[in-house]
Amino acid sequence: MFQQTINLKKVKKLSVISIFIVFILSSCASQPPQVIKEVIRDTVIINKITERYESARIAKLDKYKMSTTHYPAKGQDERVRFLIFHYTALDNETSIRVLTQQEVSSHYLVPNDYSDSIYVLVDETKRSWHAGASYWKNINNINFSSIGIEIVNLGYTTTTPVSGNPDMATASRVFYDYPKHQMDKVAELARDIIDRYQIEPVNVLAHSDIAPQRKHDPGPKFPWKRLYDEYNIGAWYEEVHKNMYLSKFPYLEKDSTTFILSVQQDLEKYGYEVPKTGIWDERTQKVITAFQYHFRPENYDGIIDAETWAILKALILRYRS
Ligand SMILES: [Zn+2]
Image (cartoon, rainbow, N blue to C red; front, side, top):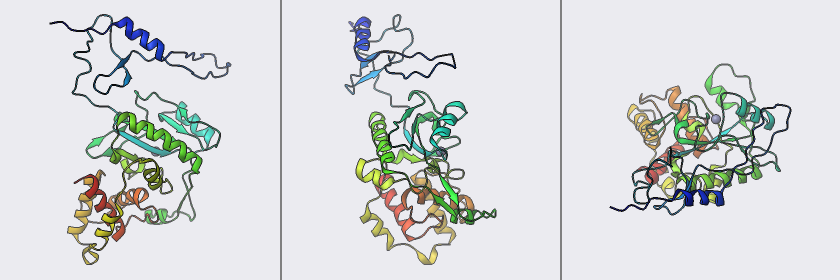
């Protein structure tokens, strides 16, 4: 049976028309850095399913058969399934140095200077090392399946000395604001990534969501609601659902094993890694704090109250039921 084989020359011509390469990475430290202006992708094809241009990284295309009948196969999806936001807790200059010269990195870095543009640090097809030990909805090691965006922000300061009591540390944390001009840049970049990889709203997350025992970034000042309202980025609850659940909060049973277990199960159902102990232990409180950073940032004390519970229920109703 006749198969239409993609004409390699035509494909090459397309790639020449589309995108080119200039990358001269100087090995001489004394020369000033050069800005990469143009990039050649491996091969540019039109995906017959999505009808969009995409690059294809394929071994020995001159020897193997790549036909429009069989390429691309239907059974596939993106490796990138998550978008993760971070703050660097460092200034601009130190952030760039650490993220390019140490064992941590991110795909993008958004500085806080008004005039400075976003830095590209790692190719999207490669893993950047931003998430560490992490978990969301049965998936571990989120570096394998995510794009990481680091945002220059100093994180938090503590107003009172930390005496080793974790509750006291939480109470004394004061986080830094994100300037609007910086968030506009973050939003534009995030929207582009979400569109290209079709990332689900529930998979657009904070580092603290996927590592709540270790991380606080990007913290409660990160404007999740504004990103949702103005750019349709990430997940958010319906106010009407929240209000419906507010009146159902079981005040009298809120410290019962049954209720605590149900909250732990709900947090897990939404995506968090949480122990099912039936008690308000420290690990569970840290998960609740991470949840509050994201969805109820006015108070992030790690204690389930009527509003936190109602928001969790409203999110599950919208996205996980
Ligand atoms: Zn982080």
